[in-house]
Image 1 (cartoon, one colour):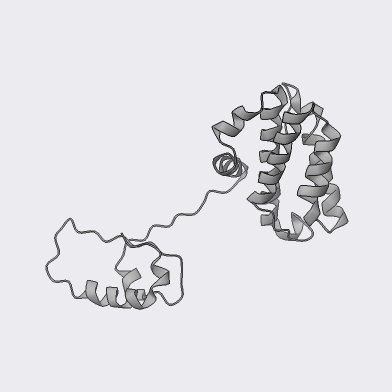
Image 2 (image 1 turned 30 degrees about the horizontal axis):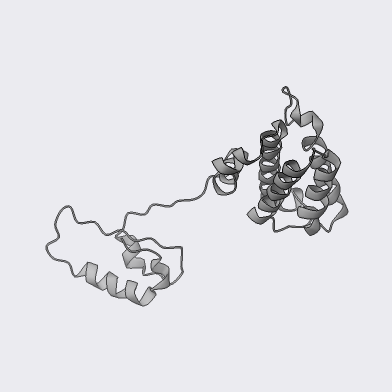
Length: 184
């Protein structure tokens, strides 16, 4: 297995010549190469290979899964023992996934393309965790920190700010804590 082959293009040129020079190859021989797309990667090596691409899944479900895999672990889930914690954590992950998905639609999603990343979610989750651990839940405080500070600090367009504040008011609310709540 050779990984990150795009970083060693001269070696890949030699590898192409070496593989072309093979005479008697055992039937079970396999050479695995991993590489990012690169315009100077040897075409002959690509043409004689079986190519497999791995692209991360897209969509809200994939975004939620990515949030739970990268940010939320079992220790974090069990850290705060209030009944609101898991629900609001899910709401934050769902909202982050929506924000990420809207970026795909360019000017139809956001008026200005913002660089939201996992750091925004981590900061919001950390705030929520500390807020619930130290005091009783204050929905206006959580809404303000998430919509105006953590994510809103990057928003410069008034329509985008209005949209994000609407998400926060509708989803990061006491209504979200009800058993029959839906993200409609």
